[in-house]
Length: 129
Image (cartoon, rainbow, N blue to C red):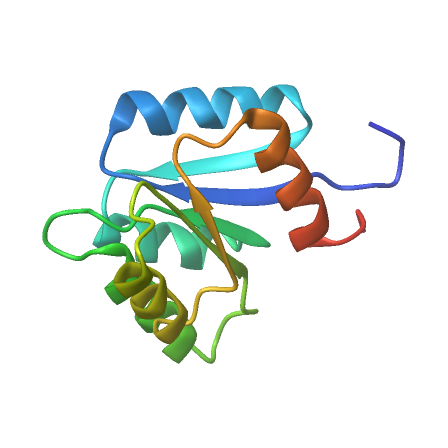
């Protein structure tokens, strides 16, 4: 990574540890700083500590689903608002409407090709600072 630049920061919130950890490892290999949370409440705590530019957020999680997490993030005025990407298998019109209403910026259907995910992250998070 060129000197004087920082890594893009991506928080992954997903209740499937194997999938979340693998995604984090793959993004780390592409110069992303990653943090993983395995549920909604854990993700909200990580958000405050990690301060990501982008959050990849699963929708179908127990206790607090991704739309509830997104709505809570959008209500937090004490943090810089990250780009919220719904990264989920839910792809029907009803789910997409709910995702949009919750405050997400983008929707990616799992499993997305890794190149598509990388391209989305590059576009969503802007140039390196």
